[in-house]
Length: 148
Image 1 (cartoon, rainbow, N blue to C red):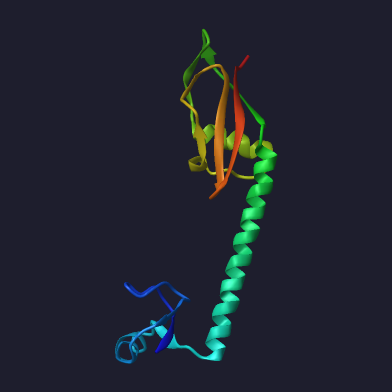
Image 2 (tube, rainbow, N blue to C red):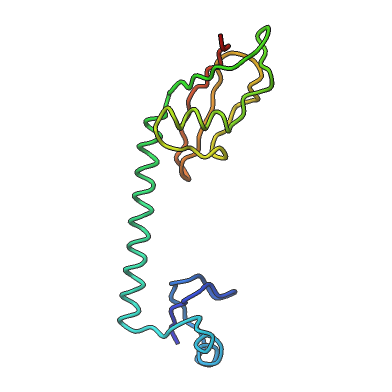
């Protein structure tokens, strides 16, 4: 019997997938627990519509990430901080870089997505990358100057 899963079912599949299961398993386990429905034209159309909407939203998110990556590409983020003798008091973290980059491009950037090539403990220019979406990575420079 073909069924459409309403929820993720271990060893069967994920929500909104169509699977072939035995009649007894469907009648005695899946249907009573409201984990699946039998495939009919209405349910099939609903699943197709959900999948098309999901694909559309994923394409929009990818396109937005690519536009943001183009904006970020080769940008120079300037951070002014206190220091002494060419060294910083402390270090510049990915959180600070993400905050300054977000202000620069006008879009919030998650600190977990920013990767620094190494710890920033001295004044100078450093390379950094930001992963905006799976497969969309952008590089930029971080320039650290002494605050006057």
